[in-house]
Image 1 (tube, rainbow, N blue to C red):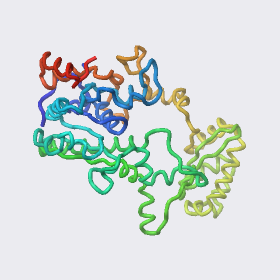
Image 2 (image 1 turned 60 degrees about the horizontal axis):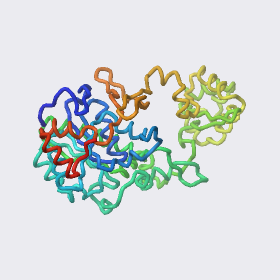
Image 3 (image 1 turned 30 degrees about the vertical axis):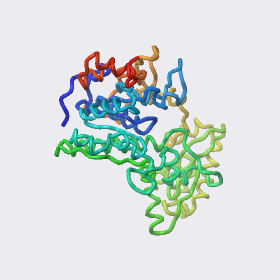
Image 4 (image 1 turned 45 degrees about the vertical axis):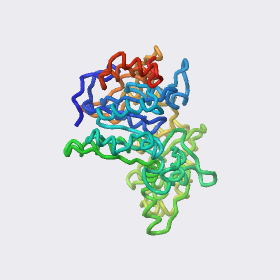
Length: 413
């Protein structure tokens, strides 16, 4: 167990939330590591992001407003920021001292990098036996590929996810977001909490090894036993989901798109009623789920013809009245305009030290009834909290901090 902490974080935010008793040191970059840290920070952990003096590459990504990356403002939210040069021994010594005073340390460098910097697990564990070290990499800390450079979309390709994404007559598609990075950050945060539970019962920390390709591969769950037992290699199926029929995307009369899912027999009967064709529910080709699976093309053609006869709003209204799950394909603009998003406060404006207007971003999920998370502030400026962290965590005096800054080991704006 680490030392007791004050009621406020290094960035001045009040410590509250279910993870408020934990200190987290994040020394990763770009997406997976920072997203893991952001999840913990959202629920109250005091997260200090250690950033290179030139800034995390995520600050160059996404759209910018007044020179500020809006993407970085979101993924770095709720964290204090310290700019420390890990390429210097003095900088690494500062990080070793910080790691000795925290509960969790998150890194997503290539395996071997921490060891090269004399920040190995053995050394960190010796100084802080209760430390949980979260290690995120492309291929894991062991195995023949472990030393390869890892990148989210590359690991996604290796995981098999890309082979089942897109239309069958086109090359594999990708999502316009860092899917595997986010997924791995989520698994890593889950692993950190499981490791903390063990630490709290035994006093012993451990390493959490989260590999991008493995986290992606975990989503191939239905296809693994199908191949192992039956030799079936899953393929791209576009918007349809084999074995779940009807479950597809249909074009409406006004050229828009609606996804309808009615694979359960009871829901399929309601869909037939909504389409004005209740007799289809008794058709032997469609009466039961397995029948529809064998005759997917036929039922899809019927549903497609019905959807094409109506404008999107009319099709949605008919399906809602019949209690059939369906939704238009939302853009981000649709989300901003939707009353349900507003009612659940899914979009919030976080105060920002870099943008006077604040930064709008997604709210915290999931929602906890008694101990909810919160968005306290947008990502901080590079090195904004360096001095405070060195003072509060390491009890350094002004002269010591000035010497580090003068030597180029830390950045204090």
